[in-house]
Image 1 (cartoon, helix red, strand yellow):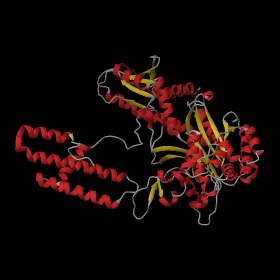
Image 2 (cartoon, one colour):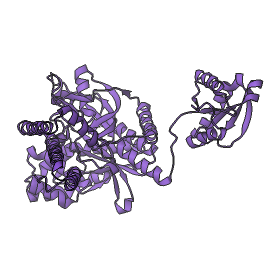
Image 3 (cartoon, helix red, strand yellow):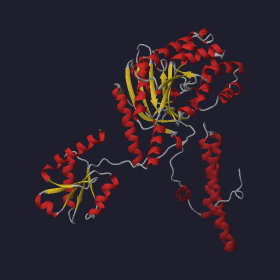
Image 4 (cartoon, one colour):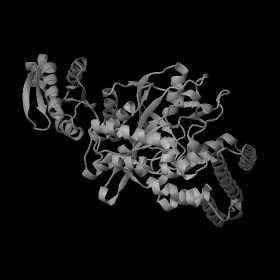
Length: 547
């Protein structure tokens, strides 16, 4: 650790300047500043210890004792209480920021998020899904052992009343627990909720520690590949409906991967960890993946090279046919089962008009342990000729044995599902709107009630009350005598389409002026018919926008 002299704080340097000017009479002040700096350093030490997972309780206790001793020393020096110094420190120390990997969302980003989520949910509903909700945290034992190497990214919470809890890592495992607990064997469900991961965030690419997932799952025993094909169709409908560019949906099968590993000579106990390495081929070169397999995971170079021949290939039905005739893969029953399933799924995708959106890719592995069959991932793409890839925005697959892990009788419920990673989608659309300098409307006010003269606040309030009563979104100025020009400017700035203007002459004749903000055209409307006229105009405007 650096000494105080090596890392002198600005507070301490100011004290030294004070000492040079005032001589020995400032010694006590200098001592106080030194101790304050030591307290600051000790707090930083404790903060770093708290970030360790798991924390070292014994070392933490020793460092806390040091902090208490420093506080006591400061109190003896200044003849004050610990509480007084804590308040002073907190006031100076507070840094206004969101936790790492999180962000705030203002009105405009929230409008964007709301619109995207509503579009996604509308597709889920179109396919007959019901919605559920589950707690944001689960018993730690529910989540442990379900995510393979990613288990280290789970947020564990402190002991809560005798229960060890963790924040949910995804929505799939809680869904499986829900099925087992409620003895449900058939359901088509969607869920939109936040999940949490102790990952290294990349905020510019929509990679957070707290983020939304949108899940669609089909649970129940059905004929092969029919639910899988609908999941692929759901992903395609969602991505096609959003302004995010072109995409491709990669397909693979866990049985095929296991059969490939078996045929190449990978020990069975290494299947999952080698799967995790293969899954990195969308970000790493084959050389980097091969290095991890051989140097870090101890796989034979000969076996790794055999795997490399296959996992770097992708295509459509013709590639499936080629692999079905491959001498190495034909030795594995598991591989043939996987290939037959992919062939059937691709034929169903043709019927659902998805031929140009799906691709069979043997490098797709999906590192999570609970997948048992078909796996898929949707990737946004740039220039296909250049092989540019924006990144994954959806993924999922079949997990037939996950529910049985929670059932006392190990009763399995076959499940297949997809998860939309909306944060990356939000980031892409935000960037696009910023580049186009497009401003989103952040309120849903349909009518603004304005006054043309002074002392008409109560009249504006009466009209607003009337509009609210009739289900029309309306507002007015909170100033008693606002200028008309300022009121009209407010409407233009906030995209409010209609203005009701009232003045003394209108009150006498029991009418109002109705102004269309975009065209500035005005007409007089009978006060008694205002609601009816406005609803017609609002409906007409909405229909035009939808068209």
